[in-house]
Amino acid sequence: MSGDLTLNKILGAGLATGLVIMGVSIGAESIYHREAPEKPGYLIEVAEAEEAGGAATVEVLPDWGTVLATADLAAGEAAFKKCASCHNAANGGPNSTGPNLWGLVGRPTASHAGFEYSEAMKAHAGEAPNWTYDQLYGFLGAPAKWVKGTKMAFAGIKKPEERIALIAYL
Ligand code: HEC
Image (cartoon, rainbow, N blue to C red; front, side):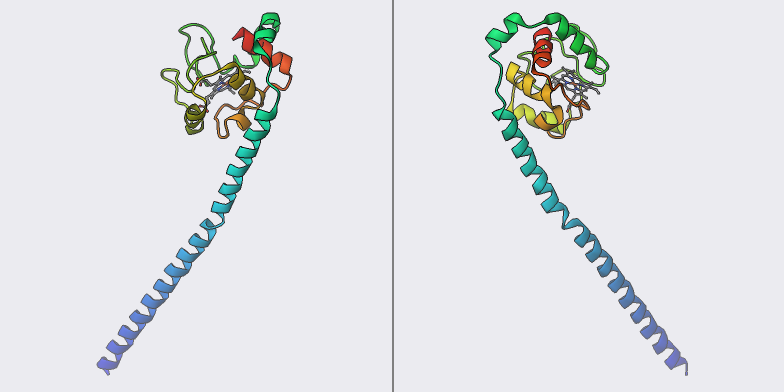
């Protein structure tokens, strides 16, 4: 009699173990299945970024030699008010939400001491080592498209004249 009970316990334990293993493998499978579709989604995002970059480079760039000479610096200063909540532009001024922007034109991308740039901006420095006029023009028109994944939460300045004036001011 007691032998039967022991056998029952062994069988019971075996069954329980089997159920646990099945449960774990079903669980693992559902995690695996949930992860799988993320990859194609990510690939599509990359494709979009490339498209956006391609479209942006098609935009006609200003002839800087001409436009800077006649740029409206007062309008540029006024436009900088849109940036001032996150950026200080004084020589030796502090970083705040965004890095200090003094001496920005020609400055190496993602280089300001003491500022934690996003991975996106650091990667962008590999493609665009300096803030040239053209780079600033593209970035400030649509920051999140020009540097996909930037943590600069700013929609961009659509009007070319305003962007030019701002860049001249900077
Ligand atoms: C809401 C806050 C915010 C506003 C508004 C903002 N920025 Fe930024 N900016 C940031 C942050 C944050 C970064 C860092 C981005 C990163 O690391 O991805 C940044 C980065 C930059 C950079 C790159 C600097 C470098 O050292 O590589 C430039 C250039 C810049 N901003 C210019 C501007 C200008 C010009 C304006 C106004 C038209 C502006 N930003 C408005 C937050 C802001």
